[in-house]
Image 1: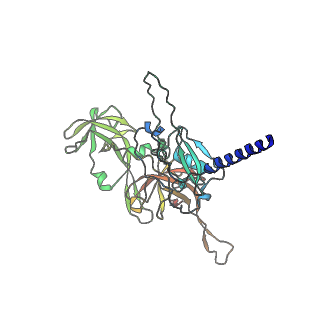
Image 2 (image 1 turned 90 degrees about the horizontal axis):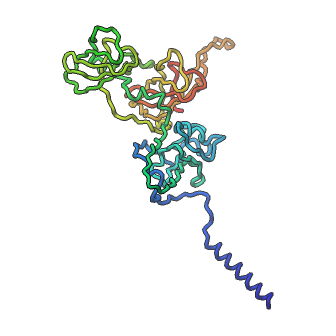
Image 3 (image 1 turned 90 degrees about the vertical axis):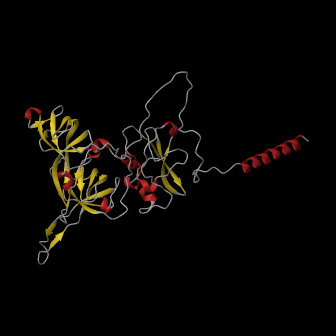
Length: 386
């Protein structure tokens, strides 16, 4: 009797266990459906920020296949550090950083998943069998306290190092010939100084119809001419400093408030434009074919390298936008084949020497920051799709 009771008990236990297991859903390692947004998240305490155009991962990526986009030694996750840029993080996971829009996945559990902050974790996941990158942002632990505590919230990371390009974003750089010639100019200074600096009082004309009070001081620089067509693309406006209006008149009185170099008579004045610049563009390949040239090296004579700036002869009219990544090729030289009949000339192939990201676009020209270089970048190097 005792044996029969034990057997019945064991049978009931097995049946109960089977029922419990049947009621449990199968464990999933990949979440492919969007979960409702939580009622509170770490993002709720972030200040509102301007969002760049969002990359999406809703459709099948173009070339190459997503599996080929990952770097050979990519991590499974990375915690964002202060000072990181989007380019740095993309380079940790991807073979080429400009693949980022093809593989980014907007985490539906947090607001503004396209903005990345120090402390966020960028992690590699798989959605429908395809690799995707998303940001995981933990909820903060709140400790109740009778005291009011204030701390500065971190700012979202930038796409590229801003220190290298900031002067090119806040001051005019390229002007049309007629626009430059029509700007007011300095005609004199108090005490008749030939070269002025911060603190000096200067005089300019004509400012009669200009309501502005703060001005950029500019000097005519290089004439940018297309090396292929001969078209005048624009005039370089060199930033000399800044000045503030003291008294209207003809000439008007101003004080130099900041000088990047010596201020000279004849320097031009342009009202300061305080519009914020876009600093969170997404590194990506251009959607259309691009074939241009480096026509100017900024603050260099013969060559530049990583984190230096170049001007190219392609702009908004050719479809370029901030964030577009271009390959830089050194044109192959032409040699004489001494060992062939007739000694024909042979052009050697172009070779990739670096990549740049376009960060400021004018109608006919653009500024690009060299993000990587395997050899020096020279004037007239070719720029094309990466």
